[in-house]
Image (cartoon, rainbow, N blue to C red; front, side, top):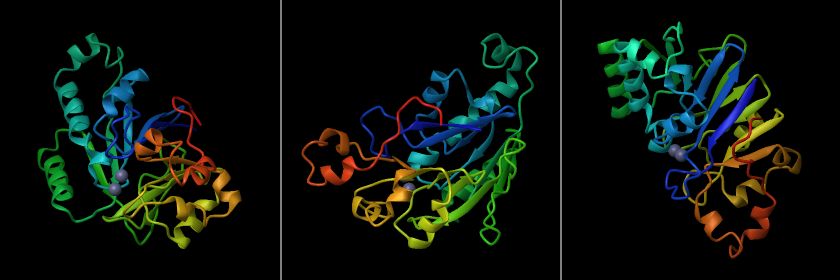
Length: 254
Ligand SMILES: [Zn+2]
Ligand SMILES: [Zn+2]
């Protein structure tokens, strides 16, 4: 399994470092975690497009995580209607079938969520199935993802229903989350942790991260990072603490 972070910043990004989203892949195909407003450019840069993605995992319904979902589905719908042109245009390789799309997400009972569900179900024209995570089982409903990757979803503490995902007991994408000891325990037991980070609100803050053991912190790569971290890097009072955190290298597979 390969995993590629697609963006490092949070919802107020002005840096061009991208919104929070991840791509993971194996020999069977590609899956994405979250589909932010800028996902299309990120995929194109890798020579991919929404037709290459067969599974989508949503952490929660905030714009920086699902702002591109409608565009994602529309792209697939138009491709379905114009397969010949999309093949000619290079989006579909010759002989490539349009893949069915599975979306796995928590339900937050919001209007946005219900509208999306209704839109996909009513029209049933996107060749898409939505799997709502059963919080009792706490297990990703598409397990095994892409044929052989085990996915587990765990509710996190955020302002709407939000989950983090664990892939093959190896990698965790924390999703947005406030500090919570039980959650940290859940995500500690892997080799690599992509952990969200923020300065305010229900997010992991510097002082929270300092509470986490060094062993776990060494496995963490921070994402969802507010831009001012970069702008004021050298001037922040918390600079020393931040310097101990590790951002991932952009444009790299893990
Ligand atoms: Zn959020
Ligand atoms: Zn967010």
